Length: 318
Image 1 (cartoon, rainbow, N blue to C red):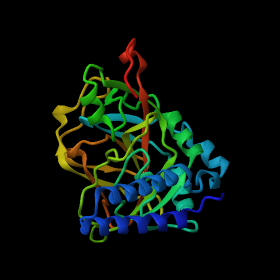
Image 2: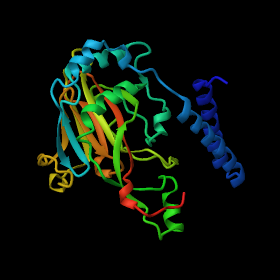
Image 3: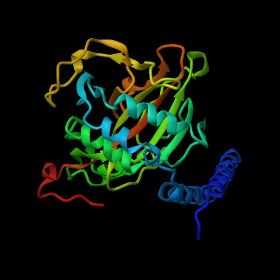
């Protein structure tokens, strides 16, 4: 059987409409649960099988060679759960990725895809988007970032969808654990951010989907890279945060450079990036061009696994 994403999405959309109708009609719990089960099954199919072409394959080898190690990136902590990376991606690679992202089929209005249910992100992107499953790019970025990504983040061992129930039924177990970074999610979402009047003035909060039942790797940190403007890889990105940035709350646990000054927004030059922890309401963000030119930003996630020593000698029910 050949996977057909278009027909699967169409069937999923029809089921979601049917579910809304059943809820409006105050249908029986059994009917509603049957439709929910079908929706979950199709969401799992999309999560497991829908893929998008890798863009790094179209980048010339000499561009990649010149981009690696051109100048090491530097990291500074801006607030608790928020870090800025200067020089995350070299200018040549920024320009090459922007060009590749505009190749057919180009950018389209976000209609939702598997990353909205994979690693947890229920919200649609505000600008026009293009998705890519790019293992080579994820591995390339990880070479330079793995030494600076925050480690030993606290999170529950239970899948987000089941954490409340498991902790309630088995309170005798130590559910919270330290998690260590293991790589960058290969799903890269390129977003075209236009002038302020073209963007929705609403903040986006990266958090786990309530339906996330994954037992393994888990996204705990968002990675956002400003690639620059559409025309010439210049163009700063302005990232505004809903709760402002309290530099005094920046943690020294990871022995990073001193926190930057307090601000309600950050400006990212082309090639710069930010890391921000999942689920912090004050880190809900909105991205706009700092100038008049549209910009391209790349979204991904840092994937983590439990730090085994944190629960040595214990077992938890799965």
